[in-house]
Image (tube, rainbow, N blue to C red; front, side, top):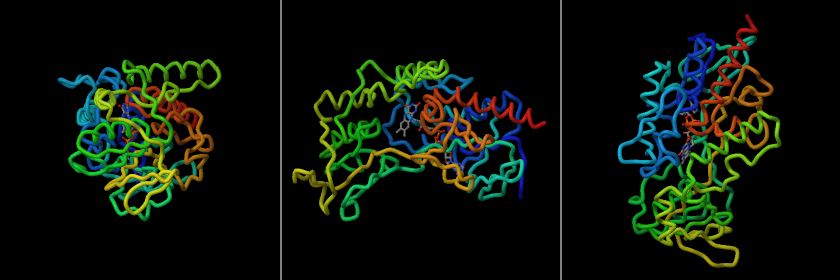
Length: 354
Ligand code: FAD
């Protein structure tokens, strides 16, 4: 079966919904295809204790503020899923689930979006598939000989699963710090980071990160040189559980080990630590395999874009993913602006074709 619409949005997480909000405002026909059975994108799979690094008021999509979560300054992931579910309903966004897009192809004047349940012909496509679905693990020698359990951030749920065990957490970003803090009380924890962890000042949370992103946006708009972006502030937001574990002296990072052995990990100087589990909090790559038929790949698995628009395929926009598709584009509050830009550019493209 082949369907037709103006715009296909691939992915029904926050980025896809923000795109839908703006496409609707501009009066375009569109559909949102999402591979998951339920609403909420990656937030459905967060570990139990995950909280946002910004208060609700700084975590809103366009149009509808995120309500405050009773008793919490920093909302948890369940609250985000509830918010995204209500958002879809409120704006009657046409999300089809579960529909996995297998490939996007050029088809004359149109783009053909192939899914497991039929195809869509569209004049433009917005890809908003996130990164959670492509966990990244570094190539460290010995990964295949280690006899314990290895898992990535995406598989981690709660400390009870590792109670009393010797656990090595790898990674000095927010996920690594939060999971290390989570495990610090009930396990024998070793936290390793590639360089000494950099904690943001305790009074800085996602609000300040967003301010930096806004300043960067403004600098770019005015043609100023590239500023450091969100990462320039430092790495780890000292959310309350991270702060508590750090202040209790439980978050002492070791340098990165050089290899895994059958029973644990070993550093260059020959020292070693035994381990029952290694948790790789080593980040993600953009989930873009569905765009492979378009042949657009650039450096580091990214697709070259100007703003959100693919350089070599102007009918394609990329939303979310990281700062390379717009400052703070991979955050709840930051995705609204690039979503608006993408929807406007598509409306202009369609108007010019008439
Ligand atoms: P996703 O939520 O991943 O949604 C993408 C959707 O596309 C999914 O439903 C997926 O199933 C679907 N999809 C993928 N491939 C296909 C396909 N081929 N066909 C159809 N559908 C497909 N941001 C904040 O603003 N505040 C925070 O505090 C914060 N904390 C974070 C903590 C962690 C641990 C992580 C990893 C991220 C955090 N972020 C935070 C960043 C960001 O907000 C989230 O990563 C968010 O989930 C990104 O939304 P998204 O819509 O881009 O992608």
